[in-house]
Length: 124
Image (cartoon, rainbow, N blue to C red; front, side):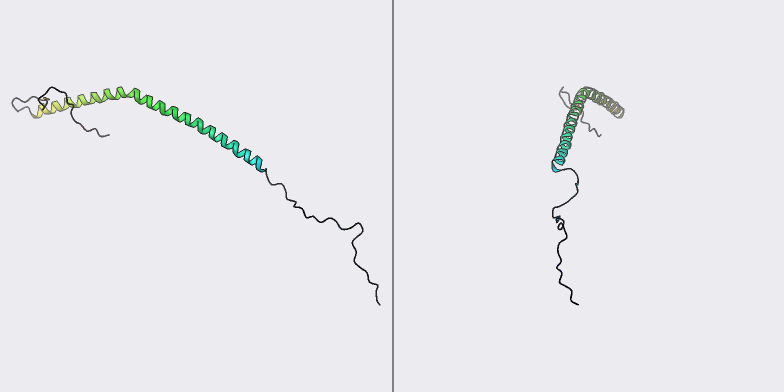
């Protein structure tokens, strides 16, 4: 009835090694590759920004020069408009004051020969 005692022993050749090291799969590029990519993208962005700044500076210079060259034309147009308005005002004044004796239309109200342009308000 009694069976002889039998101790549990390791298998022949021993147990296999315990895997205690991390066995993680490769998940994307390393830090150096990411840093190189970010540096390359930033360098390209700064390059494009510099080119854009040069273009904006050139456009600003062109705008300033075009305005400088348009100033004589705009001044001449303003002078023509002022002359036309002054002549129309003199015509209106002579029409209104035609019945007043010794009235000179367009004569200055000042008693000197210095030129004073009429004060007009230009509303844009």
